[in-house]
Length: 156
Ligand SMILES: [Zn+2]
Ligand SMILES: [Zn+2]
Ligand SMILES: [Zn+2]
Image (cartoon, protein in one colour):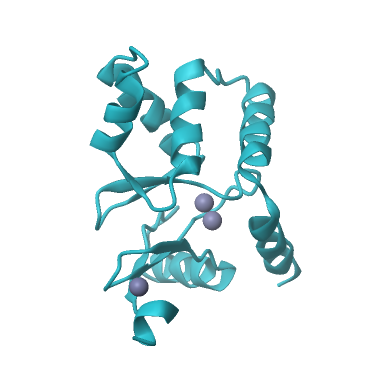
């Protein structure tokens, strides 16, 4: 519980440049290369207000003479290390707001306007682990996307 409240506080407080710094430090520590393309893709995702489609990333970065394959590879790197997430129901991508805390990230999505919020919850992670165990499965990885009405849309 304490862990969750600390994480919630951090999630609220990190600015885009603090997130870039954190990812840079994590990559250095894990001996991962945070290349210019990876950095640019993450910056773009952070700058977007809503999750980004792959073709939007391509359109923005190709003007920089970056090859599509390099952009896709950079995106894969960010996803693989939890620095970015995929919203499967929208086929779109967004930056993780708390890269220092590696855990399963969950999302709540408005069924009307499509706005997305990270809603990571240690209790949900525990319940998923328990469910997997009860069914004799190990090391579950959950992609949880909850559809709901956001505050704005609900009050319309
Ligand atoms: Zn995340
Ligand atoms: Zn998260
Ligand atoms: Zn909405």
